[in-house]
Image (cartoon, rainbow, N blue to C red):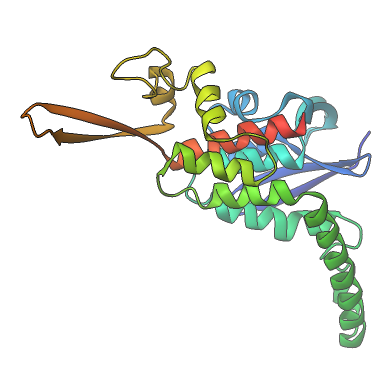
Length: 252
């Protein structure tokens, strides 16, 4: 039986965690519920990588042996990014600044701090701070592309051109340029591939997912005829969507 820890928050409710094989796992249904997903089962299927979802036996509050899905930190982040709950950012802060530090060894929580003197708390805090800095520096160095991808997602509150998104993806270590990215979008059914006036316009699938918006510009030509120029722009949701797509490919 794994060591189950339960964290409670007045706003987000209960989140159960397990520490196994030096990894911290989170109860998927608890996280999805806290982030406002109506269908928690579908949320895990849609947003979480399957190899980061594992079953574990736990004992519920009534003493019964139950099987529950637990997810990794990377899948936790995916659920946070795709949540429509306005307070999702506060949930992220709570998890990463309170829950995780209290679980990890040499984390931000000093055990039995209520019984320590001020000098002992300061001394322990310095040790903790030094370890946290070392751990963070190591993680940043090892995961630079992932950190920059996360920055791209956090900045996705405005529309950008497809070529601009291609540059962001390429700048984070993925071997793809603008032309190849357009081709990837067409091959995978996000942009219309048939030649014509709607070439490279979003497909119905992409529009249903809310990934793009279309800007139409009316052009009056000197001979009197009028044409309409269509420009496809990537919405914030689309930026996060494609960033996650290529992040997953890099991890595989």
